[in-house]
Image 1 (cartoon, each protein chain N blue to C red):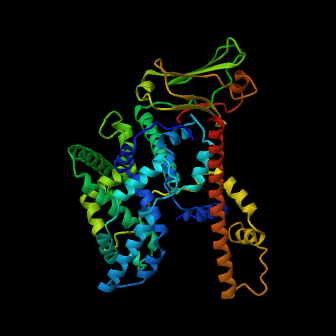
Image 2: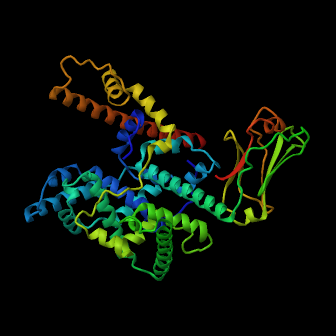
Length: 320
Length: 188
């Protein structure tokens, strides 16, 4: 890894709470969702959240927060790991508010077509942004940035009306598509405006989420976590590196697990149908093996990383 | 949600439940940007980080999106300025004499033999109007009809980019005489 300039810990934490906020938020959301299986099961299909259930949700969230943020993320930690962890603890979600949000959102309780975990991720992201804004407040700088963003947004809406003879579809103003259009317009026309030239799509989304009346109304809807398009990690962008590593990992699996992977993902039809096909027990066993194969593949990919770390440590020692 | 082919779906399923221990923060946006703009390549450690950290992949995806937006904004700037960023299909004009000059409406390309090492020096020069819409941070590439890059980099004070890496075995004159030969300038 290329050596990074030394920045002291407090400054790094501050960066993870300001300019690099979305990294901190992404790490919190990811870790929170990883520990949320029990919470999702607890609320799945529940129509009305009563007091007793609220208490249990609160307890479960407390447990998740301890697991996701409360303990060191690894030992030892690099400077940046340690800083992002400290920032995550400072930006800890508010249990009380999360319970309220979950109680008022149907999607997170599995009562819509949106996958509940996806819904929970959206809710948490929005909640964390909200806390973040409360801490920082609406500074004069932010007010000026917002005024510029609003002007560009209005220009885009007018252009759409002029071009199509009608308003854009409902929700466009609060969609990632619109935020990307704004960013493109800034780069086209306002490249030298120091207030907004460097603003990122995610930050534009944050501004709209907090300050745009239409977006705020959407947030108040029953299904807060509507299934909007999210900026997602598209693994195919990382081809062929990851695919190459993954293929090596598949080759290292034991034969039954390799076979399950080939059948489940790689179009292998050689599965012996005899007694298993169609039977529930056969399907369950197949799923169990598939999950085990995925777990092992995940672990093997991590091992690649550890090997590299150890190699680096050895190299450092040799140099010393 | 788009349907992915088998191996990509497998990759998604494997990566979806990976642990994030914050180590992905080691991969900075600056590094990813350098890699995506061709100024550098990923180290082994960075490749492994991408394979094992959702946070690192998030950083990569964010920068990739940003770079794509920059390309689109640059394309729109050129379009609004009425610039021709491509030569179109060129007729076989090269005589085999150097320097070989390939003119176009808003840019020109000159290839001349390197005075010392026997290689080639390729120069992309932009018109005044083209230079006006190009910022010092914009990375441009000159690409031919086979999608092979001839030149990549940022403009110098004279509005030029030079390259000393000729990408073919054949000579520039031979290459430019091939049917369908064309060049275009892209935001890299």
